[in-house]
Length: 484
Image (cartoon, rainbow, N blue to C red; front, side, top):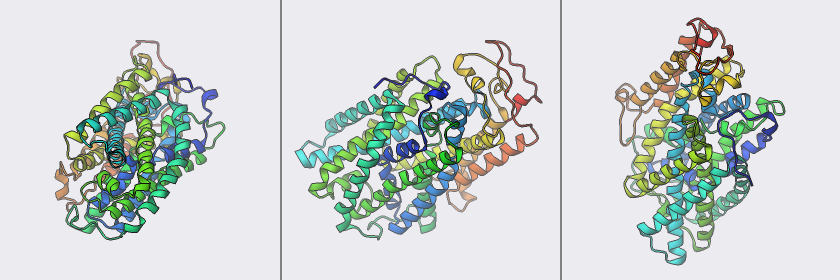
């Protein structure tokens, strides 16, 4: 299979051979890994029982998917990835905001997947073969998983799509076997000795809905376009693409997360998940669990690493996608080691997803609003100005930045960060919200309202012809190129 040569450039229509079913396959197959399963454990670790965990996960996922799924339509129309597409609304340089958000999101989730998968692999091998469960074993397993992930990500879109189709069937069967393996010990009651994380049911339920449920779809705000850009709008209707994306997000996230809740309660996983999961598994399930931990981790982190490579390629246009992918693979591997040997994993994990949700949500809101305002009409040539090292075009705005959109994002993110409640940081606005984390809602509302207010009187964007290389950008404050 040849290595994909495309980076963040525009995909020609003849190469856009994927369809909506491929979106479902990639979102289902890549998410049935322990790195996603562990999010079902989070509500349990916060002190919730089965029904509290299930309802918080379901509510958060359904709401998050409504916001996230429309982003697939952006790349369907622009034929490039989402961070590059956002240049139509943030400016061809302002789209670096999306690239950095995507890079951080993918980096964190890749490290999380490799960390959880590696811990489970070592635990299974220890029980099956007597492999010492020491630092050397963990380091070697992490390195092997990271290497396999890098290979899949470097080969690119087609390799990951084929792998996801296999995993969507195989890992579903392995999770079904897991239900049988842990069913004898399952209980709906909270894990004994695990108090509510925020002192009461509803504040803790809301924390779980945001950090475990909502964060799942939000993790894909910059990833969906990596695959929808390979779908041709001439052959597939937007409604089908949206429906496939929504279905893939909801099913692909809820199935593994609900298994995580089920298995966590069955093995009494309060402060840790991977250890009790392996220790509580019957002997016959250790081999399937080992397969899930290894193959599933490679599939899920491969998806994230591929996106990271594209985002770094977008930030550093002179680097090839392959070079960028190897660099971010090394960064993710280093983060895995830090997560295992240096940090309190649960606190770091919860803090990361809440903080990234606070800054990622306003970006997604503005990108979707911009898509609706321009009615999905994008100038593919103008979107690539930054990648070519040139200036001007319909999305140049002021120096390559749409100040209005950037301001709305910055203010929305600041409000979100000020209202967030994590184990490592508490925002000052919590005193005004009764101690309840409303960072997601406040960040989305402030960014959306401010963006609408700043751009309400501006005409719908009409991309201007791209200027010659290195020519000065001439956009007056009232020109169409100045709108959001």
